[in-house]
Image 1: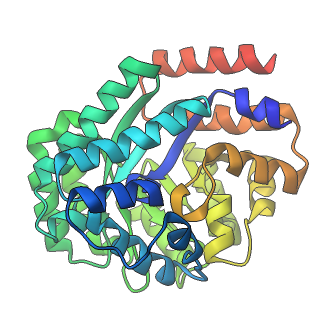
Image 2 (image 1 turned 30 degrees about the vertical axis):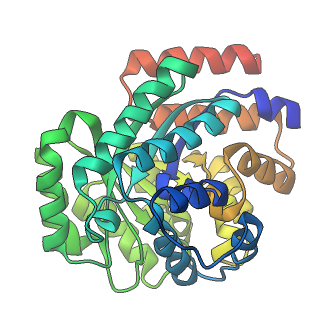
Length: 333
């Protein structure tokens, strides 16, 4: 099964590029930018990754970004992820980035987007992996700041496939950003939002995503199963759900593998992703292996998860079909 997972053509739809900052690269960028880290070795950095909630994770996550200062830093960050992903036979990825986490520190938006874009283009030429960028707004900042960031992104519109919403969900419901996402839709962006696991008012937030915002996809969203009406809406609209099992283990009471089983049985478009793999110590192949071990999945079920991901991807139909043909040929379906 490990060999089958290794060779399986994969599609990753929930991946924060800032969450791929491995400690070794963090030290390299710190040296480049003259920053002194509070750790002596990469091993000390990893040893400090003890998270028991979304809030505790975000503290370390944002602190770690301080080494990202200039365009080459973002290029190296994305290149490292895309190289790792290609080694796990990820054929296509949609990559979140958080510009406000950088512009709020004085890093120009242009430096962030140009570094990431250059890495995406170079990776496709080198290894054939294809990727698109999704710009996320930080929900614990104001809607006005999100709107300003949206407007700042418009000169780079052709480089960004959609927008998302992430960071601390407490007290920051989707409707807070309704006007921002309505404008983003008018500008041609596709829409997704995080509905994190076991948060306060989580089913209401999922309802807002569906009924008020009109999202094209939902990130995490496992608590939709708490409400049969939400399940039916998600199934009827064919909305993808980007579940991240290993990160669930760090910030909740477990990987929620049983949720993946229920979603498969209900015919929902559930997908498996890595979220912030440098912090949760598992890229997409390890996440698939975790779910396979927990649930005793068959090869056909693993292939079905990847089929869901390619179907939920923001790609033209012909491109999806080419990836699906590759998947079917590999899986023997």
